[in-house]
Amino acid sequence: MSKAKAEERENERAEEDLVAQKESALWSYIMALAAVIGMALSAIGVFLVWTTFRETRKSNEIADREARVAAEIAIETRNAAILAERAFVAIDSCVLHPPPLGTTEGFMVEFELSNRGKSTARILSIEYHLGNEPAFSKRTYRRHSLNLQILAGASIECPRFKMRRRPSYPCHFTGFVKYTTIYNAQFETYFAYVLEGPLDVNLLDDLESRELKPTYPYRMPTDT
Image 1 (cartoon, one colour):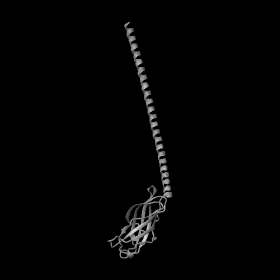
Image 2 (cartoon, one colour):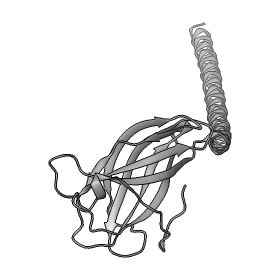
Image 3 (cartoon, one colour):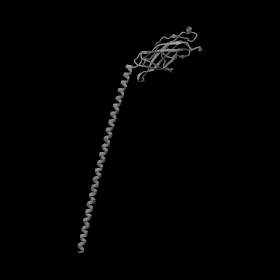
Image 4 (cartoon, one colour):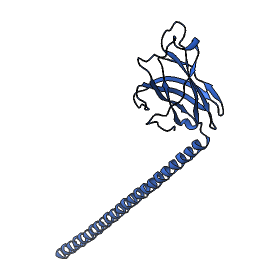
């Protein structure tokens, strides 16, 4: 009986061990399956992230292209509007005046400008150069700053500014009037005159003014 009981207990332990092994194997299988499923889900997640990134990049590229196209269209529309509605400033005359009282040399310069365009022009400056060569100079200009408005179809006389007497004559008085119009677009109107001189207060007849005649030197740029 003792031997039978011992064998019975041995069989029970063997069965328990077998059940435990089966449970352990089952859990190992479940864990392996879970790992495989996790890896698959991770791969799917990586794929989805990559797909999302790819589509986002494509969307950004499309948006960039559309933005560039829109910007180009806006620039073309702006340029067309400027061309159709801009101001055109013309130089009607340039007059030499005697210098202020108490000044014995040099002369005053006065420009008359007109706006032949369709919108208001803002005169920013008159930049000029005095040289000996009969050519439009591209050297450093002297600047007479202004802040004047000319309505469409109107004309104005710019404030006079002083220029010193030249040591030799004739000299060539060249430069440009810088102005802005709609959309703050900037343009330039060029001029060229010859000062026959010598010009000073003693040689201006009875302190009268003298209107200059335009010349057309070589290298004369085209108005913008």
